Length: 127
Image (cartoon, rainbow, N blue to C red; front, side, top):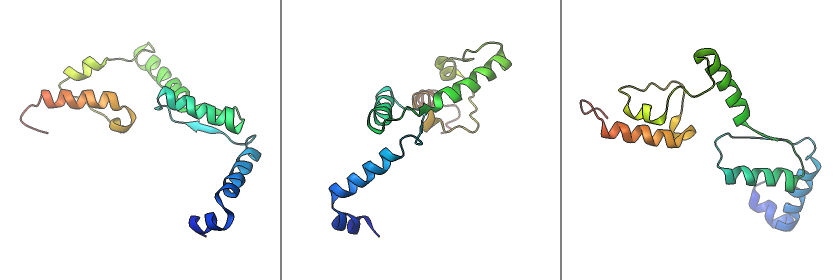
């Protein structure tokens, strides 16, 4: 059954009421696992939705899981849990190798800085 038929049969208020009741009945077993790339405002809205509207405290972000593994890796490889380079280092590097990373989506600020550095430091006309 398509959405138009559902809306014409049940009416919007009834449909939204049904969705609301279903969500509220599942709030104890419902959890959100949200991206670590959200802006502060997005985190705020996700937390308000989960805690304030749905009524569940079961919300966590990828940030904690992602950063805990990064910290462990940095400590093991470099002896410190700090990032081994700065944005400026990447901007003046002759070569940057990214493996298994969708930098444009996952790190858009860094991606823009690398792209701009690449444009201003082209060697041999390669693009």
